[in-house]
View 1 (cartoon, rainbow, N blue to C red):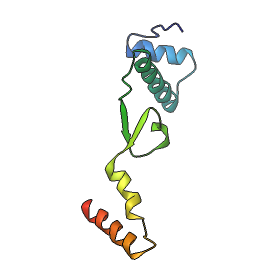
View 2 (view 1 turned 180 degrees about the vertical axis):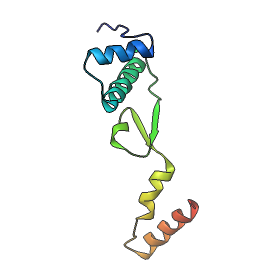
View 3 (view 1 turned 45 degrees about the vertical axis):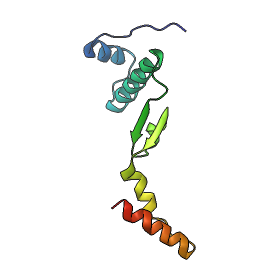
View 4 (view 1 turned 60 degrees about the vertical axis):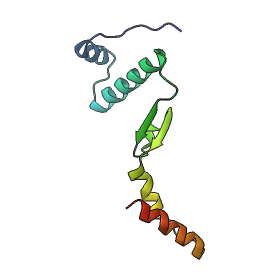
Length: 97
């Protein structure tokens, strides 16, 4: 596969997108993010790269880590089916605040 540079400045990038009919804020953002990620991959992005997010689907690529604040929300919703499970859940919940 041959790669090439589409633009060397924000102005040139916006002109390129405009020429392709990509003008809405959402379209510009999505294509720009895809181009940036493509550039990282083309340049040999580290396999250890991790994307840390709130679990939103658009970030579910590469290695995706859920931040503790958002992961903890699921723990708060747990209901143990036995006294032992309930005690373990309570213990974990007290550790997180």
